[in-house]
Length: 451
Image (cartoon, rainbow, N blue to C red; front, side, top):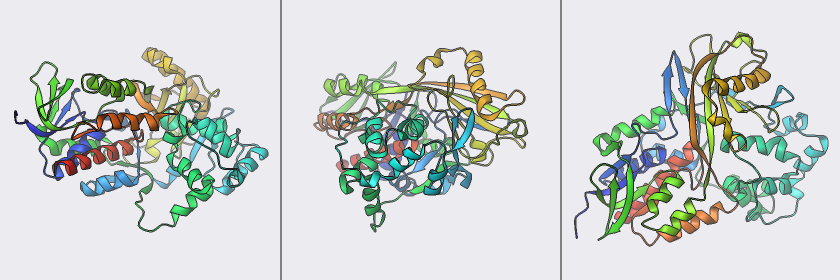
């Protein structure tokens, strides 16, 4: 048998791939990370421009139990920065005005986003008979538990912000796993969530939204720089074979690499292509996972030249309220150092499953469309300062009705291959923190298999 070149090869240097490498190196494994692009980070892309710190892709993250445990273990927890308390305040565009999203019972009673009947129906959730959420869309699950009025008024806009997705196509088991589990456990969401809230020793994350003083690039750079020459940029994997106990990875335009273990931390469609020669059926299943395209357009705004004050996390635009805008983020209101003195940074998001066509628009037309919507929301007086556009054709995975069973099937098919793991936003959560947790879990699994 030919000796492998390295203990574990990791394909992809996004958040998941870098987290896997960090965990494996801490366990004493020799790793190589192959990244097709000229930079690490994947959809996390932070840029400094004219005194602004701009997130071109992922913007903040939540510290769930898995992400928090990883950052603590990697010595990176001290780098993270909590968003200001203002981040709790969020808005929806309704009838040309920004309306606060109700974040508590009193606010729910007062909100104009629901009728009196809709509020009573939502509050009646604990008394709704238990159902079967298997295979339900988010819209079906939410309408059954919370009432049909809550779906377009609250649930749909929320999913626009997280998934840029369509509530009628996203799967409840994948998108709201804790709520589905709560219904199964307690018969209702409220009763099911109350029980584990009092359990001691249960892994917990930290509430709120998080970043670093240098944006998400702060974490990406910390993980990438620790790898040194083990991170090989512009090394595109083009094929995988498993022979004589090793994974043989073909690298486009370069020699191949042999590794005893393998982590594939790429978007699902790219992973599907790589797996075609290894496990074709798993590849075909992964190829069915859709992605929402998103464009990010950032502008600098004079806070004195708007009708609505720029405060809170930002706002979302429900279907039917805007031409192309999905929402706006007020990141300079959340973290220090995001904008020069006397300016605010506003990042507008467009596209998603609602308007995928807008990514094909030229820059000037796309900007004009979004600024018209922003004017409706904020009441602009004067022209904002243009700060650039980023386009992500595959921005956010769209976990469908049967996503949980699909991922389980893929993992079952791949289980016959030793020391092989998939990691990333396509499997167990689409956010930056989910990707960190996914990569860390893959690294831990391979570490234990190698022991």
